[in-house]
Image (cartoon, rainbow, N blue to C red):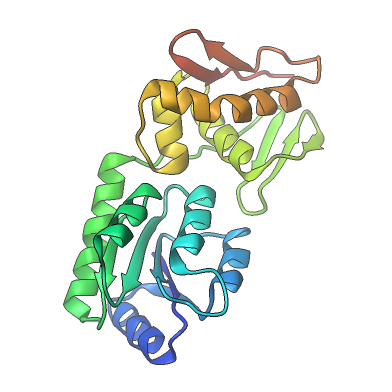
Length: 231
C-alpha cells in the first residue's frame, strides 16, 4: 500500500515517514503542494497525509480538495497542530477522511490510517476495474482513452465516470451511486444528478460522434449505464 506524505517541515516529514516505513508502508514524500498535485495528475496513492499549513503555496485544504476530485477512492487525512470547528467543517465538506493532531505519535497515526481505510472501504466500496475489450480501450496509467481506434480527449471527471461505467457493462448506476464512487461523497439523488448532468452529457457527445448514440444510456428516473458495442 502506498502512502503519500505532503509536509513542508523536514523534521515532521522525516518522523512521519519513519513511522510509516516501520509499519511496512511504501512511502512517497513531498515538501510542498504544487509538486504533489503534479504527481497526482498522473499517478495515485492509497493514502495521502497532507499538512494543513504549507507557506509559499496552496494550503493543505486546497491541495486536498484538488486531489479528492482526481482520486475519489484514496484516503485523505489532514495533519495539523490544531483543529477548531471551522477547520473540521471545511475538512468534512471536501470529503476528508480524518485529521491527525501534531506532534505525531506512532500508535495514533497508524490507528487513524487503519480506521480511515476501513471506513472508506465500507462507505464506498471500490469498483473493480475489469479489462475493457472491443472498441473501448482505457489506459489507467496514462488516462488515455481510445474509442473505435481513435483517441478521444476527456477531462479527468469524464475519464473517471467512463472507467466506472465501463467497469460494469449493463449495470444501471444510480446517480447517487455514481457520484459517491466518483467523488467519495454521498448526496441526494437530485443533487447527484444535477452535479453529474453536464459531465455525462459531454461524455456522451464525445462517444456518440453521430455513430454510436446508444452506448451511454440514460435510464429514466434511475441513472445511467454503459451498453457495450462489439464493432
